[in-house]
Image (cartoon, rainbow, N blue to C red; front, side, top):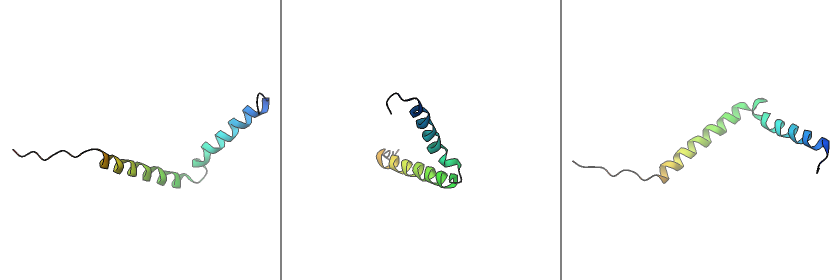
Length: 57
């Protein structure tokens, strides 16, 4: 684990494997999750940002 030669290669392989999950047939699910995340982030911003007061002129 600490300073062994094979541990760095194993860590890189596991990181690459987890990053490739979205490209192994689960890409539609990943796109749906990403889209919902963006929608909910936008809705959260709408709640946080104050609305402009209506100007009467």
